[in-house]
Picture 1 (cartoon, rainbow, N blue to C red):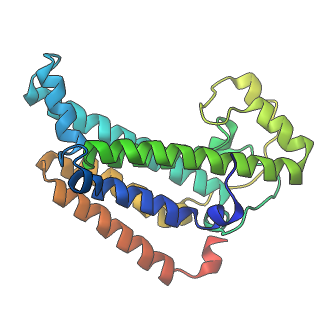
Picture 2 (picture 1 turned 90 degrees about the horizontal axis):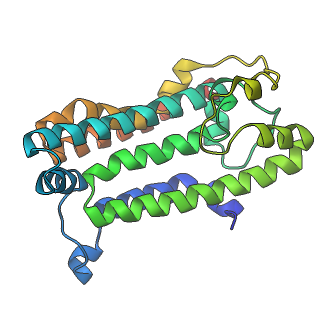
Length: 246
């Protein structure tokens, strides 16, 4: 089922609510479902309990996996936004210009939604286990609904060029087959890296929290770093002229 226009317009708010619910996990105290132990702690302990890794090793391994997921998220979000443009990424309505087959869009049709998924997957390590499960399932379903809505909209507006693009480039699993990529004409658009970095400070903050501050094993410190990155992102968007994101 495709997302509605209202859902698309409120997509940032809905994604935020999903993430906040994952952290809050009110069902733990209300209904006694699950325990207030982070997914990071649970996974490290389970790897140790099953005899796969000693805890002294499993904890750094889990941290590394979380940091790698956050790195993938930051790369996809900044790379995709640099080519598509922050104004289009943040617009409240679906936009249909020329078919974009440059940058990450030569390998996968939805790098931004894929980046969002990886960011939530990285954040899930800081959530209670049941909260992590809820957030990943909810964000996956919502992202797929948004993707289906956008594809229907773009296919209707752009016609055969976009339908050919859909046929050649996969929706979510990137392709490295050069035969598919070379059959797509480049648009000649140039990436705007600085604008993209300013627009995607939140996934960059998530990466910083997990790659640098996670080694302190202080969950509150990592969450604080992420919240600070959210605040800096809001301030940056308020101070930078809107035309700079066009």
